[in-house]
Image (cartoon, rainbow, N blue to C red; front, side, top):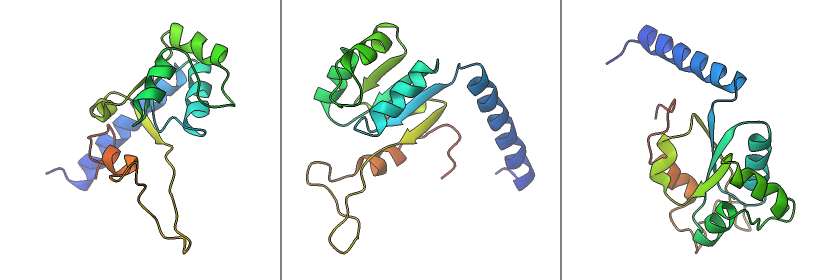
Length: 142
C-alpha cells in the first residue's frame, strides 16, 4: 500500500501528464451522457482540437452521432458530421471503454421528485452515473 507521500507524488505525476496533454490537445476527452448538455460540450472540445469519445445508454443516439446526425437542436448535423468524419468525435454505449479517456465529464440528468429527492428513471434504473462509477477511470481513486 502506498504511503500518503507516494500517493501524492503519483498524483502529481498524473496531473503533470494530464496538463501536458491538455496543452498539446492530445488528451482524449470522455463525455458520459450525450443529451442537451453533453453533446454540445463534446462538440466544443472536438472543435477545440481534442478527440472526444462520448458515452450514452441509447443506441439510436450513439448510432446517429457516429453517422454525423445530431438529435440536439443546438448542434447542427453539418457541425457534428464534420467532426465525426475527421475522427474527432465518436460515441459508444460500451461503458467498459471509460478506461480510454484521459478525463471524463459526466453530463447525465439528476431526476428529482416533488420533494427534491433523487429519483430513479424507469428507462435507466441503474443510473448512467452509477454505472460509469463502476469502471476504473484513470486518475479516479475510489
